[in-house]
Image (cartoon, rainbow, N blue to C red; front, top):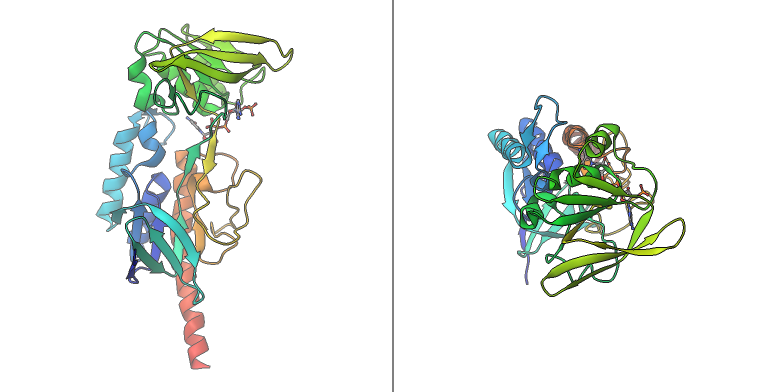
Length: 322
Ligand code: NAP
């Protein structure tokens, strides 16, 4: 398909989760011509989270509601949102970025802010793919209600696993958290909540070898003790897997510095090793990934883009004059 080339933007923001929406708001306030491209509804991971209780100023707010508020706020400052899937980002020989989308558009701009988040890491065990959507899920808010009265397993030991296990007890009769070690890495407050929940039982030191079931859904997990190697089974009506996220950084062509987990390394301006390519939120290498850190990154990135473009234009002018 021949791409329709659009040249009129200062910056293309890829992704409209909290980072993308916040970058769009700041870009608007900075009078930048910005386009934010998102393949789904704006909100990103907020739409996979039931209640948000750690976004300062909002003691408790539904994920979808915060997503809506962020979208409205960004639009109030002129954010332009396009629904499309970004397939490739490359830096052309003239130093401009080309952002190619599934709808055959090619957006060209001197800067890009990548806020594309990540996709859930898969266990990679037999039965996982076969039962995906039929007993295997990666989103408690999306699928929890399908498991009313069932016994569920949650795999993982980070914030997502422990928090979502607690969430799932509103539907399930019991939730096992299956974790491969003897302690969680989740934050203390989430752990305490889970330990206090009578519907949650933790299965320590176990890894999932296989997810078994029938056409209609999952019925048990085959587990292996990570200390003794002993095998066992766990009867369940569904399994939710929360073992981390993989950053969506594969869109960028060419080498960009990243850490061992594939997260993009940035400087204090949120600029990656590719000049003009900025990163914010879950795609960026950092200590923690929260809504607050995502919007912090995005604020810095949008303001840094403004300065980057001004400096680049100054240099070009000086080059022309000399
Ligand atoms: P995470 O913190 O990386 O935790 C992943 C968990 O999965 C770890 O417990 C890990 O075990 C386990 N794991 C990884 N690979 C596994 C495998 N192959 N088999 C079995 N277990 C495996 O990921 P996350 O929980 O998705 O959180 C991602 C980021 O989002 C974190 O920075 C987190 O703080 C943030 N987050 C915050 C909140 C909140 O604050 N409310 C909610 C959700 C997420 P080990 O511990 O043994 O490595």
